Image (tube, rainbow, N blue to C red; front, side):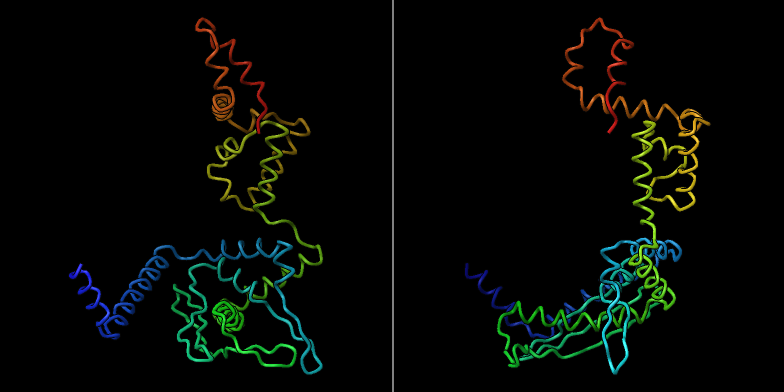
Length: 294
């Protein structure tokens, strides 16, 4: 017990410079790791732009993507912090956030930053946040840690937005704003992933063509489908619907049979145990095919 107490006291007696140096070293190693990963997996500009377009086609984002307020007899508008965050997330390889550097009596020192780990372009803003809030014409001092945290976060959001927009290419920002405006006016299609998901579901319901069968034909997963692949799916669907071709002309039935057998095993496990040993495979197979595909 005395040994543990001695070790604890030794840790407490360590100079603050040693602790700060250890924290700084750890943070430096984390930054090196982020840069290494960014160089190993650089962003694909075309895919990043497509992800941003798809995100801006969502009504919930479009409604909060653009701020607008009057100033000096004119109307000022621009991308909001919500749109800036979506841009950073989908552009990729960007570290961003708000840090509280120091908390003093009655105020906090904070920093908002955005750092492109690929190009090493960095924007940061250091600012002071008073622990006060104006309510009903009076200045109220903040004592609750939660109120202080929310005040720092709210004031840091505007600085963070400015930092992110400082490293995202201007044409990408303008494209995102334009897409959001189209969504608000009802002139935009659904995001590509949503349209592909609906197409896969329709193929399954109408023709019992599964996602695995479609991926087998295209040669890659549905997550990687592009607008061109979606148009190809529409053409195949129209051909099947009009009777110009059959499912066998486009898709491998072997993939469908494997999926059916798996579904049958999942849903009819108990029934298969009751099948007599002398029943052959041909008699059991029609029961499996009668199961609806979900």
